[in-house]
Length: 395
Image (cartoon, rainbow, N blue to C red):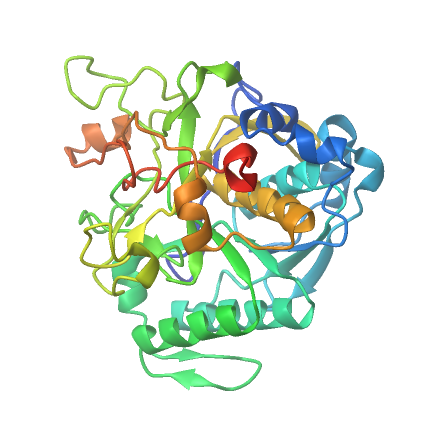
């Protein structure tokens, strides 16, 4: 993760910039196979008429995006440059361009017919101000008739809960505390008919990286009940798409420990998740046995995945990948069926992931030994499962 100046907001992409593209890195065509999207493309469904928004800390790179789509898009002739909307004036943040590269390139490759809109936020603002910008960006997305939004930014729940007053720059609305703001944000998302997909974090159960707080916790905005929280998976056999998926994680240093997993190709990171200490149980989770909002809701491939960044191919990891992958699938699904991926609809239709855990080697070396394991049914690593098309469409 990359910490933006001025607040503890994080851009969730993990990048390996020393070695460039590494063995086992997937491209969009691999994701098409993994999630069974071929029938949609055979019907001519590429996301035409759909609009996907992205919350970013900087504008995307048109040159990098075009280069990526020319190589890897499922139909490069349909891809169009991303439209950028400035919500908060910002010079960007370290690593933020790599985040926007990942988000728009992957989503645009899987849904090349969709119009992509990036909402640039000010990562240097105070947290309270930044939260207001998120509200303003989603309100603008609604006005722009963008119905699907991908967000790969996050902040630990304890920091969110201590943010203080939140103010909208656009409307002047002010919420005295984050809980009141959270309720207003959910109301906005639902009233505008938005489907928001947010990354669930890259630090296992410890959402507070860079470890100023060692308490297990999830991250915001994944904890918002109106948001779809996206966890991460990895392939059971790195690079082999047909091998199936497990929760992204597993430390790789001590094979004698229960959390060991040689499949974790980025052993200093792992998929986030957990139970909120702030947000009550939403109705769609009432039968799961958790005492509050639990994340993630679902999961998708977290890496390694190829992007083009500053003209070079790189491998990236993170639940930052899971959010735009799922957003693109949601756009294709909406074009095909006319419905959005709402929690109550997709929970029983996902493919269960019952293997793996979300520990990692960095946590182990710090003496942080709490982790969650994937298992049958809903879990705090992969939620209700992965969005494979056959399960969503049905027989």
